[in-house]
Length: 260
Image 1 (tube, helix red, strand yellow):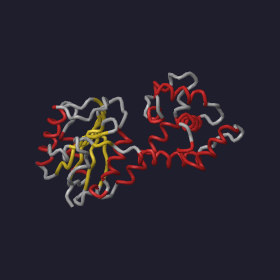
Image 2: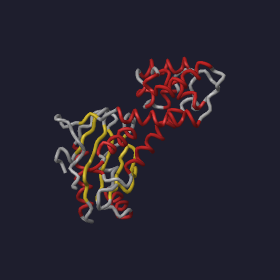
Image 3: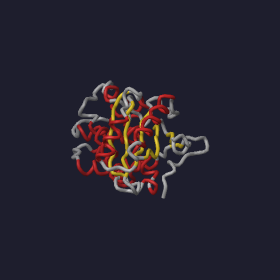
Image 4: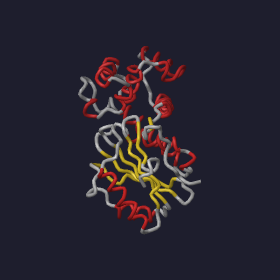
């Protein structure tokens, strides 16, 4: 089956579903609870853990989830007040999880050890979602692709450019981060993408980058880069199936908008 782009809404932008990524965080968080020792002498924390084991994330307030995440790195420290301060500063659980490490540590009493839990959950969620789509046929799992990209690239302060390499059956071979910085023709080298695609014996690729502003509307530079990469890969008979731009709760698909 031919790839026709990720599903879009009528406005041309799709609202990236948060329910599935949050479910992933719940799975990863459950693993964290089992792996990391939390001092059972702290009755309050033990009750929070019991609430989570019984009802999942739905049974906890946002600040309680943050408190447990903080204690993964400092199991013998009371982190309740710091957790409340983080929710007050970043407004939501998602805001805290996506928060910049330096900004997180602006809260009194929070250091590198405390934010370990947030970093660990983020990294595990990204790895979990990547493993779900590797060797799978992209057209059969479009939402899995969106979930992976959304969790791994939303909320970043700098632009990240990734390439998804696919085989002849549109199965994902690998995901490679090409560069971190500002997307521009001087930073994205089509020859590097061509080299990696040939090395991985890829038949096609999907280009992906994020917009830290949250607005996934492609710029003129985005369109120019896409054209350059398409032409470079066409010379070696490798197709660009899509260029996806990740924004805040939404994404833009060049293929769906027939811009390829």
